[in-house]
Amino acid sequence: MCRVDVEDAPFVAVELFKCGCGREQVLSLRTNVDEIVTIDDDHVLYVDTNPETGEPSPYIVLRDTVEARVSRSVYYELVAHGVEEKVEGEHVFGVWSNETFFPMGRLDDGA
Image 1 (spheres, rainbow, N blue to C red):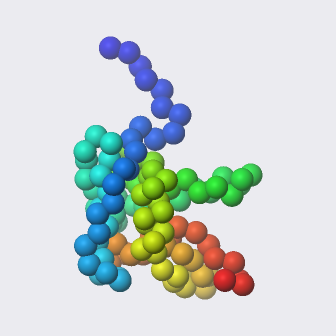
Image 2 (cartoon, helix red, strand yellow; image 1 turned 180 degrees about the vertical axis):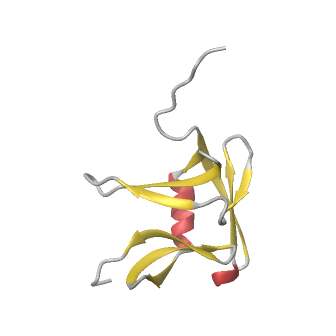
């Protein structure tokens, strides 16, 4: 046995599954260890943005404090299913899953 330090997230979301469309769609992700989770209130999708580069880093919460980083290809698939919504007076881009909106980024005023 040995200790392993993880710099980012210990798992990677490598595949996206979509059922339905619009606000009723359900999005699920498969991790690199074949765990499938549905993006919902218990498995939150969120995006951290690097303040220096502006590059997004998307994650999904698998359980408690365990997260998976969303691979670049899956992130682009999520973006393809995204929509613009107004949240608390701000225009944001994100995806609907399991009747919940998950913001992925703020849109500029000119967007």
